[in-house]
Image (cartoon, rainbow, N blue to C red; front, side, top):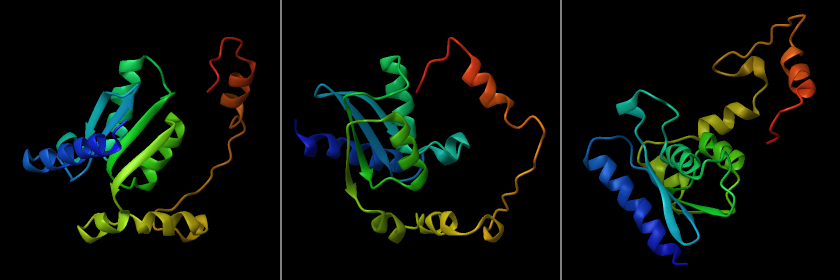
Length: 156
């Protein structure tokens, strides 16, 4: 498997997306059995979707193509080291490996700095820029209880 070839395609997608005005400079491809099964470009600003990062878009497209919510035996190639949101999505999708071209510091130098998110995660809830407050409801556990009791659930 030629990792450079797949990474080059991710970088091409990122550049094409910028030149077409689709979104930020990020691209991703997902490969299974040596073939690209899905691609994604950042289209946050054109879709008005803050989750429309290249990796998330590629994951969505790959899962649809595979008819699965997991990327078993797949490899994700991305033009840049994933941000915290994409990192979470990648772990939930469970590919067998991730390869990236640029580092998050390269993205930061271009104006895409996600270090503030890592900083926020470390802060106590009361000190975060966006307040997080738990409201106690008497039935707050009912969704989990329903899940545990549901006989036909599909574990993931």
